[in-house]
Image 1 (spheres, rainbow, N blue to C red):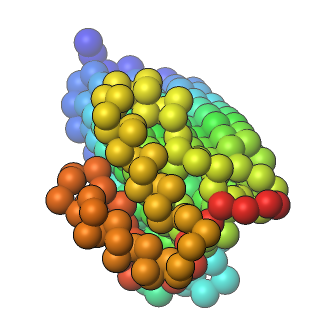
Image 2: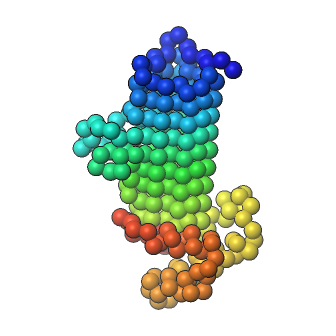
Image 3: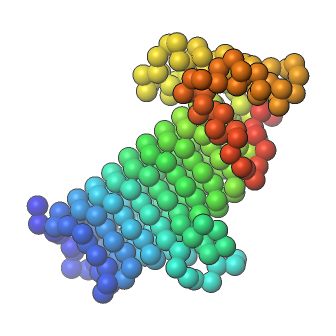
Length: 265
């Protein structure tokens, strides 16, 4: 399929459209340091700028702004980047910002993600594959979102927080701590409410694996003893199993935030 660039689109000198099967719609702007992979479609009225590298088969809908200056008072330009994988759907009014020199210098977006209307990814974030950001979901700077995470509509994740793989954040939930993999967080101030059972079943987790995760969750957040003591017990009882290793690895990584626990909002 031949490349289609509308006559009103602006493709800056230096921009690379890396393939013939690329569409750029009316009144869209592509900056001079942008690389766009083959089979990508940029609809009308999009802005893609900065040092932004985009993979193959991505779709950008009208009024999305990608790679623009991050909303950070100390940002003064520089060589920061935005990397976007393959086969993402970026809907209307989505904003994704590059990294900063006082952070990692890179914002990284995985593949096969769906970013619905008005969602936002701030500077220096790392977002995995197969994620869903529902309308208005936002994450602050330096946030890490694992593979297969689901952020409900108008939810927010505070800067420097981590959300583990396969976790779900409920609609209108504010997350101000780390969320363990496979879990569900809900409430105006997010609290753990159990496992993400719907997501796990949809992704064909085996019944025995879900049972195992339930046992680990109940032991980790049992009322008896300290969290450190319960963590040691989880390692002793379940430590050789890959799904448990995912949780333990998450808990052992350095973090700027405390862990989200069960409890009343």
